Structures are given as structure tokens and as C-alpha cells.
Length: 439
Image 1 (cartoon, one colour):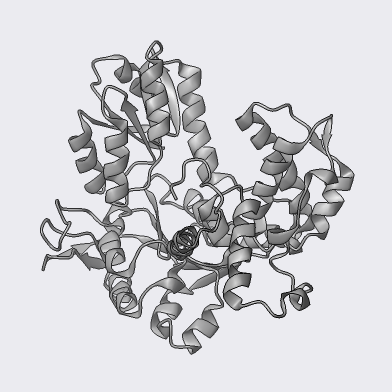
Image 2 (cartoon, helix red, strand yellow):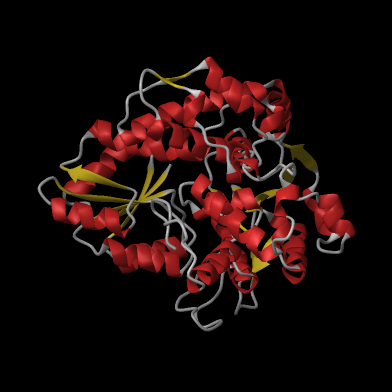
């Protein structure tokens, strides 16, 4: 765990940092917001930012979003400062930790972030075979390509590879190639010098350098522009990158793990992905089975998500009844584990009594995204109308969570937001964003 502390170490936040270090965290300290941004641009890396509420949390989060730095922020402040705590949470802070610091609370926050990143839960033999293969290749330096439908847990397997490799004490850095516009992705990967282009207000170290000595995850790599693929291939082959606006190459020692929800062989044949880059990445290939082919995992994950959702919302813990499990196992799960998580979250909120029964599930609309049995009922409707209803139903299914809905639909978050903006302009009612998301 790499923790960036924003605030003076001479005060109570300094005590919080010492507790974090005792719990195994590697702590970097910044005296203010500008220094914190410099640290995040510099490639030193962090998994969590802990910021004193005497600083403008909203400004910090806004600056991070503007520079595409995606890290959870935890706010800290004196227990009596309830107004600042509320403001920090509204601004987007993940949690508020009261000061003076409590060792158990600091430990819980660190563990929660680590668990959120690394939880890999399975029992089904189909998944076990994949993990056993991952275990065999984890210690190597080989590039790994992980394929599978959206929501099957590709990033978790990538983190498992890193955790079980000689690089585990170095950084694990993830880049979502589908979520970042093509013109910005090159800067994200290779970094840039100040003034290299409009908006380059300072030197920014790219993800290759940040992951030096560690592992770089290129998530949904099949969405990468062909021109950038050529530059990526060179960086992997030569083990060096060139920042935008610079002529000097920088040597990097980074293990590459890539993921895709597409059939990569078909993507190569279709001319949308370079064959030479595909072979460079596909030294080892791990294919994750969809959730519908992992019946034992449906049961164990349903129980896990039910417990987690109950704890998160302060609801009583209810067991998932055998009848409910049987219903879950008959569903097609087009959104895989991510869809199951949302389904159990909703079930926890809607259930009463001692257990979660089958009546807590509603698989109408978005729940049948993978089915074609209802196709006849769509005759006479325009494609645009059917698509709009499908998107709205999926958002209802994910309780407004745009990111999860985009994954289930198999489109980018940017495409989804563009369509939702168009629907709003047409006067269509759109579900409100999920917790912590923007419209």
C-alpha cells in the first residue's frame, strides 16, 4: 500500500502517517495541494491519498480529475469539524477519518482499499484452472494477455499475477485504454514535458515510468488506436519510452499485462489490432470463463456481496436462501460478476426477514440483456428506440452506476454519457448517477 499524506507531519496527521507505516504502508508526504499534485505527476505513485480537511478537498479532487489521476481520497480532520467532514464527502472523498487518529480505524481504511483492489474470490473448478495457470507464470517476466467478457474479473487476475511475482514490492499501475481519448492516451502512457501541448501545465511522468520495476496493466487494449499501438510495440521491444515534447529516451523495466473483452484473433484479422503487437503481448494467454459457466462461484460470490453490501449500508446480515441461489444460477449474467454484485446490493436493500429470497431479484429488462427470446416483441420499433430502452433499463439495473452499465452494455463510458446527454436533451428521464459518480 502506497499512501500519499497531504498535510504537516508535525501535527495529528503525522501520527496517522506513523500508524499507517506501522501497518506496512509506504508513506509519501506533501505539505500542500500543489506539492501533492507534483508528487502524483512525478511517477512516485500512490494507492491512496489522505488529505487534511484544512485544505480544499474539492479543489484537490478537481485537479486530479483534470489530469486524469484516479486515486481514492480519504479526508482527515478533528472530530468536532463535522461541517468539513460533510463537505469533504460531498466533494468526492471516499471516507472521513477523525483526528486524533485511531490505530484500528487507520488499519481498517488501509485494509478496505487493499481488499477492494485485490479481492479474488472463487470456488468453481473452471476458475481454479485459470488461477493455477496464473500461479505458474506469475514469477516469470513474460507478458500476459487476459481475455474474457466484461465483468469477469480480468483486473483482479492481473493484480494476482503482480502480487505473486518478484515485482510485488514495486508499483502495480493500471490504465484503461477504452476510457481515455486516443489523443490523451499517449501522454498517459509515456508522459509529457511542460508545454508539449495545450494543457500540459507541468511535466507529467507517464504510467510506463511510474510502473518501472513493477507491472503495467493495459486494460481493454483492443480499443487502442493503431498509431499508438506502433509506439507501444516499440516501447515494449526497446524497453524505453520518449515523453511527448522530449527527444531523450528513458529506459524502463516494466512487465506488461494486457486485457481485452474481444476476440483478439478476430480483431487482428479485421485489421484493428497489429499482429506483431498481439504476438508480443500473447506470450501467455489466460481466458476467464463467464460467470454463467461458474455455478459454484455464483453461490460463493452472492454470499460475499450480500455480506459486503449489508455492512456498507448498516443493514442486518441475511443469508441467501437455497431457493434464491437456484434462481441466480438460472440467470445468464451478461454483466458477469459486476452484474451479480449490483444484483446482491439491490437485494440487500429490498429484503426483509431473516434471509434473502428469490423475490428480492428483478431480472426484467436489463437482466435479460444476453437473451434474444424477446426479439419478436421489438418488431416495428426503431433501432434507436430499442437501444434507448436497453440503456435506460441497464442503468436502472445498476442503480444508476454509469461505469457498471457501460461494462454490461459493452460500450465505453464516454459513449454512454454522450447518449445519456442526448436523451436528456430529448426530454427522456434518465436515472441519477450512482454514488460517487458524475452525470
